[in-house]
Image (cartoon, rainbow, N blue to C red; front, side, top):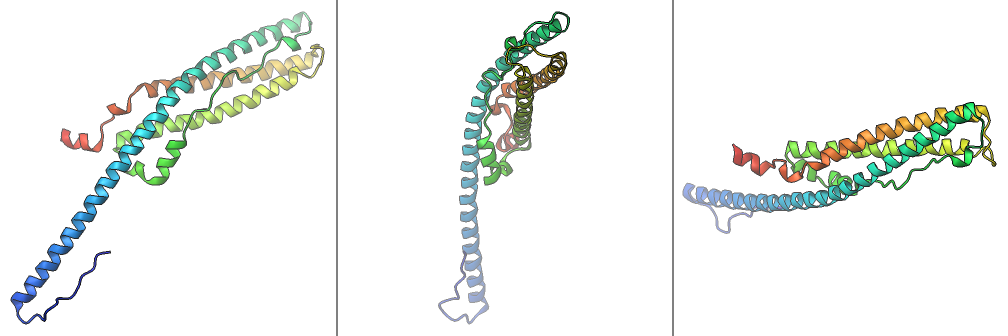
Length: 221
């Protein structure tokens, strides 16, 4: 709070009045300048901290996306083998239920806690447009990956439940037809999730240091 105090002595001339007004003006400008300087350095520190924390989180997600791509390859290979067994069982009935593999493998959730935090503390408003656009793209993709992973997991559990209908593995023709449909749907989900993971992987290859900041843009102009 900036306070303006009355003069200690009575003002009797215009000269004294203008001197007093000038003193007040200079004092106010100095106070405002000091306040703005404090705010500037606070925002600069806040932005640097947000960039550092986001860089750490994205580095973690780079490792996670590699693990998840390997997991989707394993899941797709299992599904292809399941589909081959199911088609074979249509022409040559045999206990296949125990041979079917429906699982998520070593799939990890990407992280977005830092992103959620910086959205709340106002750091995003301090970023250059290109930099902000990069983060928004990355984390929107991560949100979709989380959603699609959940849907894929639900469909895998459905297929697993159908495969377990017969304790001895002797599935009925109807069970086999349902499993073929369920397996095909899971394959589609895995293929779409793999595409999203590759898009994320490509985006994460771009280092955030390459994105021009506000200060760098000013230097360019």
